[in-house]
Image 1 (cartoon, rainbow, N blue to C red):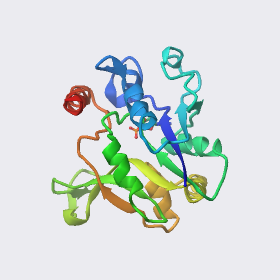
Image 2 (image 1 turned 30 degrees about the vertical axis):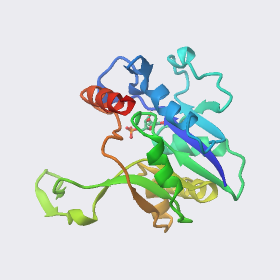
Image 3 (image 1 turned 90 degrees about the vertical axis):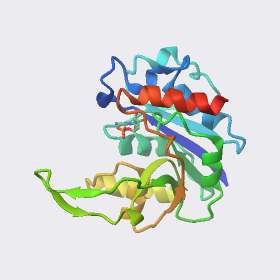
Image 4 (image 1 turned 180 degrees about the vertical axis):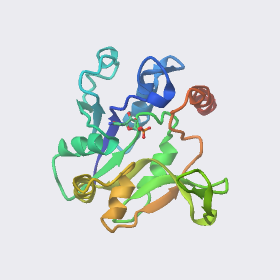
Length: 227
Ligand code: C5P
């Protein structure tokens, strides 16, 4: 099968409270975006192309070291993460044998082993990295009272990469967006289309850098990998 990656990097990262979008903050001398792309670029499976979705008029992109990399194709993202991913999918030549690996720009601590675990799954509906819930999970009412406790044995926290056949994912995202449904990851669009993608047990270190304190945490996890 042919593998293409899509990296949504068109968010503003408001929860980080920084002067630039979080993917352009530096850890160990490289931006978060560069760390994330590097894991994909150096993976031995030979990811054919990486479609990078950035905000239109992104002022930080011009200093970006991978701008002229032959594998990377920069496109414009959309209003939501799902719009950005769908824009990316539209840039890929449709072909029954093509699978798409979608990975958040904001997850720099991904490893090749994580990607290998996803690639090893033989599920025609695709698979995502996720971790089993550790804490007890409460469902809340509108005024922040506990409505009920979920059975945490059945709760997983979704990460990226998420890996699907191109044609199934494109149709699923298009339908979900047309119906105005909230899709915060690719798997949720696939679920709405009636598929049950596989959960692959990942590592809690594969964090999405979101809040200010996540920067130090990501730096620590990356330093552990280099040892
Ligand atoms: O907002 P959230 O943390 O879920 O964003 C996950 C990823 O999606 C980030 O890498 C962000 O840059 C990207 N994104 C995007 N287009 C948007 C919103 C978010 O590509 N409109």
